[in-house]
Image 1: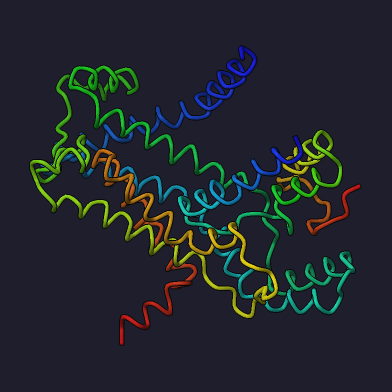
Image 2 (image 1 turned 45 degrees about the horizontal axis):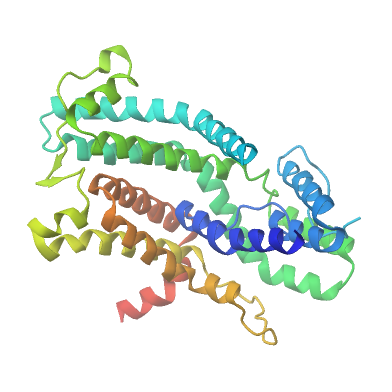
Length: 77
Length: 280
């Protein structure tokens, strides 16, 4: 499950994310130092599938101006 | 299996729920533009309506896109400074963040609010695609039914729309026209790929002063990403060979506007070395 999910995220990063960037003509629109997909990959590696996906979803919810926390790469607790 | 099916069904209806308002707006805009051009006796009104709608949408989203492009430009300029900070305070993430924030403040950069302004462009893209695909592609009676089920009362049509654009049927794809028009029609995919390449090349500007990872052997992902400015334009060019010409018209208008906007805000970007070579 861990490996499958990480592979799926990697495919998204290489193919779909790049495709979206090219279609929209914009290469940088992430507010975080480490993108959500990289973060989720790392979280799955360190904490396992369920917790990793959960942390990834929480991270995506922080992609809005009302989240005032740190934007740099952090240890996953 | 049923569970999976209902998940996909659910996703589909969420997608439609987001897309439908955009589709309604776009059909109305398109028909309104069509009427304006038709009353002005402009030849090939549908083709010009497609271009006009694309430009209207691009102008409407201009501030949104401009903000993001300005942000990327400033970040590109600051990249060497940030690398410096990172090297100076290695391992101290908090200190790096503080110093980076300070640098941002000095240069008047606010961190981006979020990715929503960018993501909102995707339904715009797919919405216009879906509208044009139906309007241009449907048989006359189905086309009238489609348009009339979407537009305001005063925009209803009784005649099918004229889908010719300077002698080219907007509903046919280059692959279908190969037989009658011959090899000339290949120009459409070539032009589409060309503009897409320029935009992609401008976008993926090399980071000034950015360090390159020398020790890491290039894996598939990094190779693919560095080649994506060529791979994706080719892919889009190939697909435009099988798409209706009306869609290629929309897509090229969209890309050209994007190129101009990018040039105005960010300059030539990654195209600069190539441009200098051409000028010589």
